[in-house]
Image (cartoon, rainbow, N blue to C red; front, side):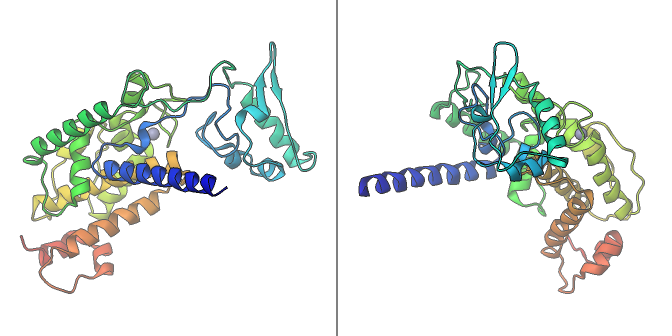
Length: 327
Ligand SMILES: [Zn+2]
């Protein structure tokens, strides 16, 4: 018994180490945590209710009433659905029989599941996005990290901003190198994704330009930013055009305006990932507030005078900066 406990503890430590290392790599913009993508085979390893496997939303989110009736919330996909020779076979195990609203939810769920394709001869797997054969290798990971480091240092000469945090600076380098793991790029690498459409609007394919600039939800963020600075916004379609939008006349230092755009890009991408991987709803007002807060933090660390007022900042940042910012 003690051996079992000991093994369990030791394997937990291994996983904790892997997760911690993955987080460090994420910070250095290698995107390790997102590089394993679940591929459903027979459904023996994926949670039916609490993993993204047939929709961009978890089934527990899409069908909350039914989820509450489930007798085993940890059920695997295979325990609830199997492919028959002619039809899909469902194996439900409810606490009580669904009726009323829950019966309608069950119709919706079964309709959604009718599009499921399971392969009874294959286990669920986690192929690695960075290798075309899906197999993780330390050698390949090492070469990606080295490549990333080289790219970062070669870009830093042109992509430096003394106001920016290091991780945002590295993120911007990755966008310039078109190295963000947007779905179109993952698809090109042969990763089998449920969908390559934008997870926020579902109107278009998720490319770098779409995710950060031309998505209607990203545009709302850029529009708010420009209104905050009393500027009109021309809604560019491409990242390069957004980056090169000239600074307002009232902005007395180019790095101030550049820093704001960098924070905008960083927050849009971060919230895109929060939606996909954590199920956190997209909220333009909250993302805009986050941008204002980070920007305030960056700038308040740079102004020479102590009194850097939040409310004045919100009402008119450009005027405020002319008075307070010293290069
Ligand atoms: Zn979109």
